[in-house]
Image 1 (tube, rainbow, N blue to C red):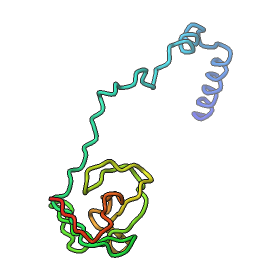
Image 2: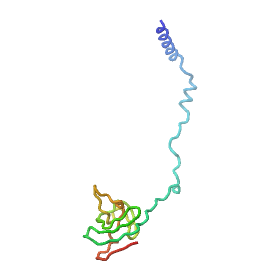
Image 3: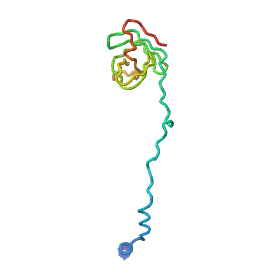
Image 4: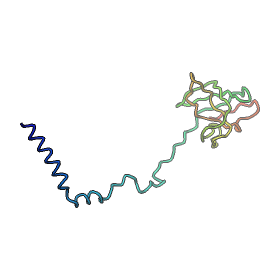
Length: 146
């Protein structure tokens, strides 16, 4: 008998909810309330961004010899990236903007550069550094930059 009373009560409440709707004022208020803005209206000023720190040049870079028209032998020494006594650098095109480690001149994407040779088993710490191809002498002279 208890279950029948509960069921009748549910049916009665449902019928009352259909027959006697909620007051219109509360519906209008809910529909026309201003919505929250999730987007920022102002962009941050350019001064708000911090400048990108340019990496300092290595402590010692020396072109030992030009092995071929597309490879160099470089001596590299830097306290952060290590010491490479006879590192092979290959000719290629710059994939990103950077600076030449020999001259400090800017390198733009697509410029002819020399980069340290890397492969799956050997990935040097200075692999993102580059030397402009135009900064490499064509003769057998050795270049030192301290």
